Length: 249
Image (cartoon, rainbow, N blue to C red; front, side):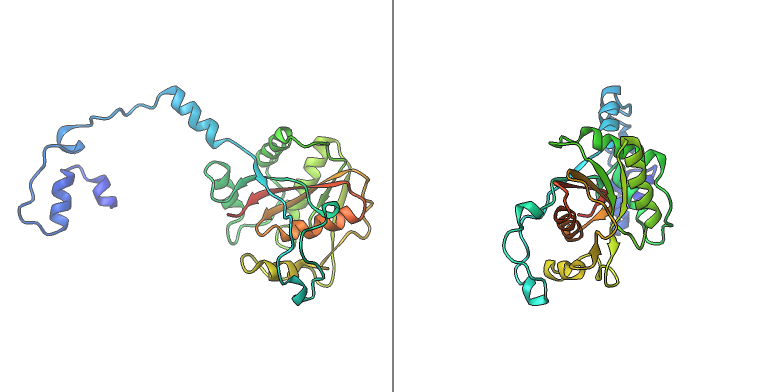
């Protein structure tokens, strides 16, 4: 396919010879034979539209509303709908991993073997744009970070950066309990929930009676955010607004 794209000869003849057609001759009609017939310049309006689309930020994260069936069989004492007073609110991600534009930046950031480090200024600025466009009912009263074992510097710097720019108290990060969450991406919802249940803690965090911005690096099944939001709501937060850099899927 690369040779076909780069050939300077007749494209139809190229295909015929590739298929061992002894009668292959130039077709006289392809772009190499007849010359380029399509415009090669990109209009400024189209270029501006493409740039705007690639630079778009903000993807909604829908909160979980119900516990997975069978959770109680794995020792998680919940079933049915999640109590409205313990649910997370609508969240936001900077981008999906599969997106163009910022999705490409996120794929590089979360690539296997990528080093942990402070959030880049350009990424932080893009996150601020997401928050500025977020139509929340009430502005967050404080910022809390999720505990990250793979990217602690990234998550902490992101949470602290957003708190500083928004002039919000940074309350620190949730604690890990009983060794912290287990399991990995993918898998059944019941097992994903069981892997984070009772594995997080609000000990040492003074949760305000107001909305809390909960910051993490990535959302996948959303059960970690769901369990963390439940803890913060039970500790006094009136709402929990999850914010992550990347949304998987």
